Length: 211
Image (cartoon, rainbow, N blue to C red; front, side, top):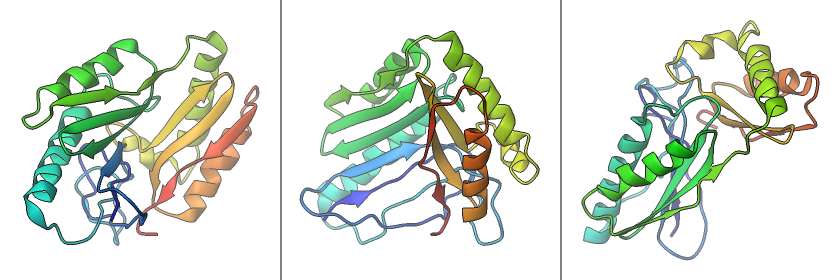
């Protein structure tokens, strides 16, 4: 059975639970991001956190659960992790694979250095992509941020230390990553991002809490 941990982040939501089913292997995948202020149906602890449901059997599973928790903790504590970055991880026994996109090369190396120190981690496969420097992409990041977080109804998400809708820009193409409270919020974020001049396309990977 494959357990998939979706995006998680500091401070809030420990109660958004979903199951991603697959076949083959026994590994855990998680990606980080902060969730919206929790609605009534969402448990509040500060991040949008999809945790694989199911019983844990065997010491190996328990060990991976502990490593996964500690990896998440170290990543969410990185000082420069922000709304224009997207980090994820997978735990396979004593090996941790890091993936996602960051705007700072130091964030990639800092993530690896912190995870390497965790007891039980013997190797780190760092597949995090450092996004290219591009003035036009920087302009688009700021414009999309303002378009989304300046919209009534979506502006409440901006109250988080790390806003839950992450904006990844590469060569004018935008990916929206994270968790929102409703399908309407997901659709509105997509519309707002598509309306920014200079954006070539938008991939909306936002997840809806509890869906």
